[in-house]
Figure 1 (cartoon, helix red, strand yellow):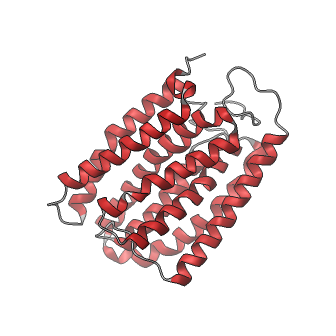
Figure 2 (cartoon, one colour):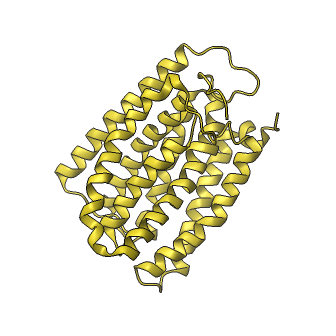
Length: 266
């Protein structure tokens, strides 16, 4: 068995440190890229800047254990119904993509590749490393705490993108709620790839809608209310699924991170 390392011994402290480091990185990149106009160049620079952070996340995941952090093909059959939580976000993204195909093949594919990289990067950190560490204090605790940190990490977009405070506040709220959704799917399936796929699809649609900018826009009152209602409902269902599974969990073995039914196989 791999040594769990500092992340599993001081999960909350290390999780806060990671989020602070990611925010500092975003602020530094904002200063460095300030003279680069929105468009393909900035997107490529953003993608390049994510790669070292992703490598660090994968290193921590390997130290905890890749399977323990969700890098497995198999989906726990007892949690497969949780995949339905991703249906509405995926459907919304699928409906938005065709309407923005007019931006051209280059931006269409570039935003798709960047969205996949963002999904892999953020899910590895937040639903892989951070959630795995925090869930040692209990799955529901880990789910909520990691989602709150995910929301807080987006609050600094008010500085890094220059977006209106109202737009960033809405993004923080929806990020926290969808963080619960992705986290619930991660916990109930035991696998990280469904959350990565869902995250990438949502971000691809968002990047296309905002292109060439990446700054979030202030939603209308109706749009904000609808989004919060939908994501809030999905988050509540996700919490219920994880809470019920936590309540009837079997005794965890020494290699288990989550006291939930573990997937069999790789």
